[in-house]
Length: 125
Image 1 (cartoon, rainbow, N blue to C red):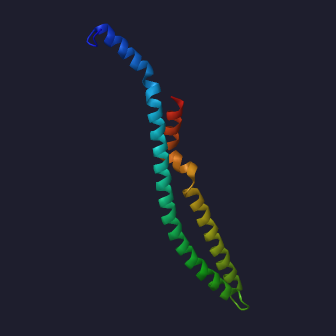
Image 2 (cartoon, rainbow, N blue to C red):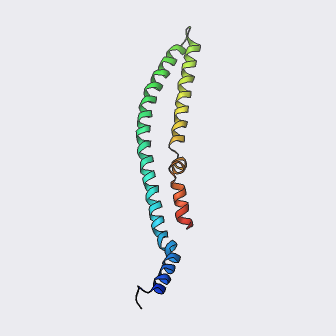
C-alpha cells in the first residue's frame, strides 16, 4: 500500500489525531516546567533587588528615627514626640516587611504570570 492512497492517508490522519494529545503531553509538561523555572528566576531577581534596596532604606531610616526618637524620649520636654517617632519608625518597618512578604509571594507570582494555569493545563490533558 502506498501512502498516497486516500484511505491509508485518512486512517493515518485519524490515528495521529487520536494520539496527538498523548504525544503532546510530555512537551506541554516540559514547557510548563520551563515557565515555572523562568517565573522563579524572575521572582528571585526582583526579590534580591527589592530586598537590598529596602534593606538599605529601612536600615538608614530606622537608625535615624530610632535615635531621634530616643533623643526626644529622654527626660525633657519632648518625651511625647520621641515616643511618636519611635512608634512611627517601628510601624514603617513592620509595614515595609509586610509589603515585601506580599510582593514576593510565590503563589502571587504564579497566579500573575499564568504559570499556575499552564501547569494545570499541561497536567490535565
